[in-house]
Image (cartoon, rainbow, N blue to C red; front, side):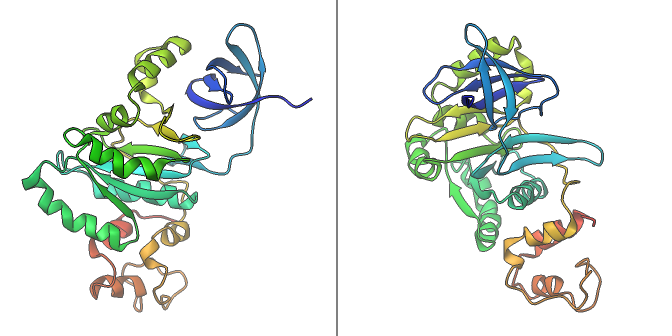
Length: 293
């Protein structure tokens, strides 16, 4: 007899909140040494009393968005369709951090878009336009919104893109991500409170990703992540990073197969940046990553 399946909405240690299609959220724990689930996982479970369950196994993932340092990694979400990176002109965003998130997503075949928020900051917005143009040139979808003061216009842009998909929302603190979450998910605050109550924890759940159902279309999910100040890529090789830069796909090959794209003669990437065929700033940030292997 096959076990029922559910989606993992939130985690705290080996405790999870899961939800089966058409069902109510359940508080679940993992059995034995089974793989620890992450938000977005599909799990097989056994009901265990009133609104509780035991996770028996994790269904094979189609992808896993994660960040990593030399000896440890942090899984953010599994089975993701797309990543929405939120940035704004104030406070100043880190394009290096944005690039890192983009590469981590591309390696896992996760589509990436940029949500440029706080369009109402007119003076600060103008210098941002050049960087948004560079991202569009690199084939990223870019939304320009003001979630706080032009809510309906923001919804009109974002809801069709998110319909029927699982979207991770990520970005630095202060970019207006919480305003976007509350706009897209009017019941987000109550849902977060319910998750905290179920897990028996309060502030700790703010350091982990949480999933919300979007009401405007079936099978539409928003995964909210905490604000990032760093995003390690120790799990990504230099070759993976290179192939995750979409603007490099059509360029000629470098003279040397093991080119680091820094000082070697005949480097097609460095030449393309010098000639303006690819964005020089994104090239500089890519080289500074120092990816190995």
